[in-house]
Length: 211
Image (cartoon, rainbow, N blue to C red):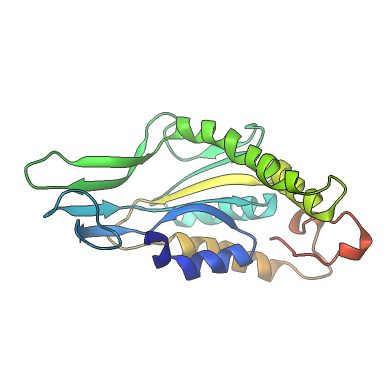
């Protein structure tokens, strides 16, 4: 139900090639009894930082790094499949709280964090799933298998945390700023293979462009 608050925004960026796998909206002191956001004991208040996790192409990653400087309140972690490229503005070991609640007669409860150590462990599984759960459904010679393997081997796993849970969620604004900038900078005559998913045959060369 919580994801329903972001469905249109998630669908929009997925259609433009940002492949989301996890998200949550910003929440500032909503009742713990709220039917969509609420959790925990009655009479409490819950809080969340906006969070977005996704796979993206190398060209998007490079553009993202240039835009992130305009959003100092956003923590990021970006890694490739091999772990040879690892970019973050966070402490290498310190978790970031992204969900917490305040309840009568209790200490603050903090059920969800973004942990940089766990993120690296999850990274291996996340990239593996492209092959074991998706590419394996298709013949190795098929266009579908070729596209999925390309994503698995070249894309980046990204997580973003907007620490300003009071003002709202800037993460979709940030992502769309990257996408809009890339669209303005590209043209049919300058588009490169880094911006387009490969095809296994000439008949499929007009498949979905990924920015």
